[in-house]
Length: 165
Image 1 (cartoon, helix red, strand yellow):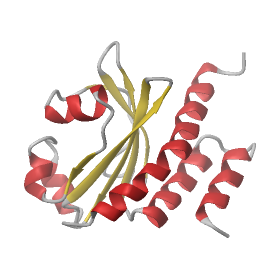
Image 2 (tube, rainbow, N blue to C red; image 1 turned 30 degrees about the vertical axis):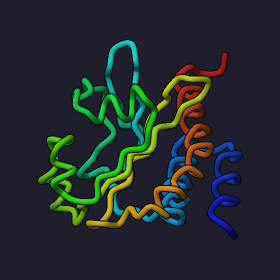
Image 3 (spheres, rainbow, N blue to C red; image 1 turned 120 degrees about the vertical axis):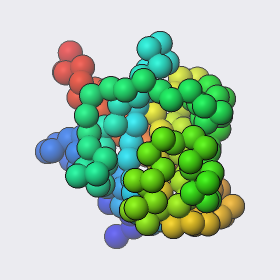
């Protein structure tokens, strides 16, 4: 079974949502671009706060509340201009993420942050980390295919937090 089909089936399933869709999204992401550390983050453009809604390493990167966005050139690139960010060295990661030492300790020295935008509004980012040099131009191009499934995950998460109205 393809990872996209698996994702679609998990998204449609009634039980354990949105967690099962998030896990399927992690598998799909690994199949398309490769990932060691995978997280999904939502962003509130009004408050400039971020919230991690899923992590494949919850012991190291847990799902907890909100935090202010660290304003760097990454912020303008990803959150404001809605462009995918790539850094293929730990030095590139250190320029924008204060937790670069923790990232490196996990064997990750490259990152791709894929913004998910619907109707002009950023819903969140798909965050993938791997070994140095991992996110080649081909993998970055393939990451575009994550945006629609990512949108489904972010919208499912928003629905889950609104309740059934």
